[in-house]
Length: 397
Image 1 (cartoon, helix red, strand yellow):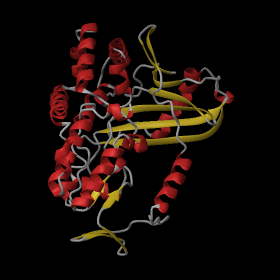
Image 2 (cartoon, helix red, strand yellow):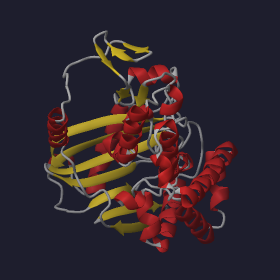
Image 3 (cartoon, one colour):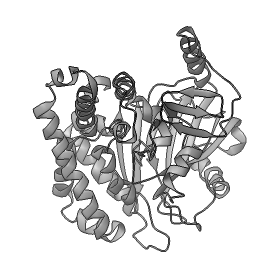
Image 4 (spheres, helix red, strand yellow):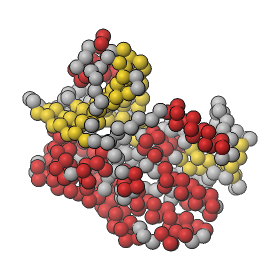
C-alpha cells in the first residue's frame, strides 16, 4: 500500500491510498549481470572501460575511436552524453528535477511507501515533495523538487540541508535514531524539445540521452522500460530495411503528445524565481486534482500514476476538477502564464488526435508487413500513435 498526501493551510490535508504502484524494487547489480550474460551469450562483444573519444559517420557505417565500426550507433550515455549535448548545441533545459535522499535503518517498521508526500508550504521558491519505500537496508527516503535552470536556484548541498532538517518531522524520528547506509543525490534536466532527433545519420539516442521522459518523472531505466518494445521493434526494423538516415531514425523517436502535455503539470508544481503565489497553492491544487481522479476510479488514476497520460482520462479529470473548484484555472493562470496554457492546449488536442488515429488505424497491422521502407514507416507511425496516446497502457499496466 502506498500513500499520496498533501497538506495545506491550517490543518487541511488529503490522503489517497493506492495499491501496486511503484511497489517493486530492482537490484541494478543483478539486472546488469543478467543483461551482460544474455548479451554475451548472443555473440555480443563488451568492452568495459572503453571511453568514446570520437565518432565519425561514414557512408556505410559509424566509426568509433577509429577502430570499432557498425551500421548504427545507439547513444545510451544519459542526460550528459557528449553526443546529445553536441546535438542540442548547448541548449539550456527548461526544467530540472533536483533529488536527494538516503537509505538507512532505525525508522519505524512499515511495509508501505509514499508516492508523493508534501507537508510544507513553498520554501526557497520550491515545493518540497517526499517519497519513501521499504528497502533491503531499511528504508529509502527522497526529497525532490521541480525547478527551472536559473543560476540562482539552491544547490544540491543546500537541498540536502533541507532534507536533514525536515526528515525527522517527515518520518517521526530523530537523526540520531537513523543508521545511514548510503546517500544519493542528482538532478534530471528536461527539455521541451524532446525526444531528441539527432542531426546525423546512423546515430539514435535512447534512454535519457533522448529526453524521452515525462518532466514529472526521474528518467532513467524505468522511463525507458515502457518504450522498450517499441524501440526494439523500431531499431530492428530500421536495420532490416536499411533505413538508417536521419529522417528515418527520427520516426523511431517521434513526438509523443502524452509526454509533452505533462509540461503544464510540471509548471503548476514549480515556482519561478521572484514569482509570488500563495504558499499553499501547489499542495491545494494537487489535493484537488488527486481527489478528482480518485472519484473517477482506478481506470483514470492508475495510468496517470504510472506515467501514462490518456486523452479520455485527462479530459474526465479536468472536468471533475473544474466541477469541484470552478475557479481552478483562474488560480493557476498567473503561475503558469498564458503562453504555457496555449502551448499545452496544442499538445492536448494532439493527444486527442493521436487517440483517434490509433483507434481508426491501429488494427491495420498488415500495412506494416510490407518489405522495405514503406513497411518500416507504417510501423513507426502506428507505434507513435499508440504510445503517444497512452494506448500501450494495457500492454504493461
